[in-house]
Length: 214
Image (cartoon, rainbow, N blue to C red; front, top):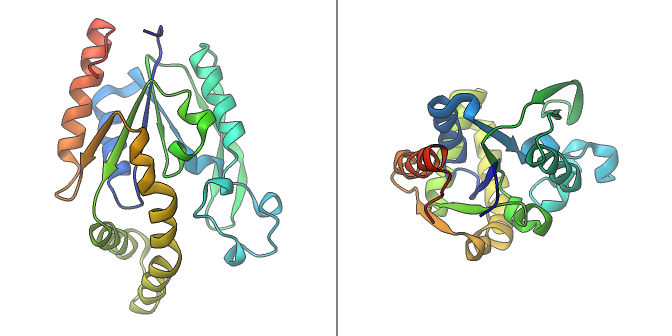
């Protein structure tokens, strides 16, 4: 078994419950774990070779600077602190500020395309796939957009169209097949609390014994 830190990868389609699971685990374990999100590593427009953000396709693995992400994770594994980029979704650019992250006993890598990138997969000791049906994920996306982003009926209609034409087929192409790499698949159709419980037990056992229950 590899020495500390232990690296856990968590993925699943948009709306599968990753954010909830990650937030709950951070509440439970605090600075004993560190989370690296693929969302921080979106490429800016120039690197995507697009002139306007609405022409850019973000629902594919190449939309992220995965090499930079892998480099930061390797530094954490080697016990080094890193400064994570901050991506601004309003301007589709990186902010000047960065987030300093210190090493921890458990490193969690999360993102919808993390399993698609071999260099990232190879850094993971344990891979978790959160699975929920497409209609469940769409419902959660819409509720999120209404509650958290103030979307109107008109913009929600566009969001549904975007989901059906772009997000859904790309998730079926890129993300769903990634279950084959998972050590554990958790169904989140009825919510993500069970996923939190399962991962809490596994992480707590590792922190106490240095062994991870596969």
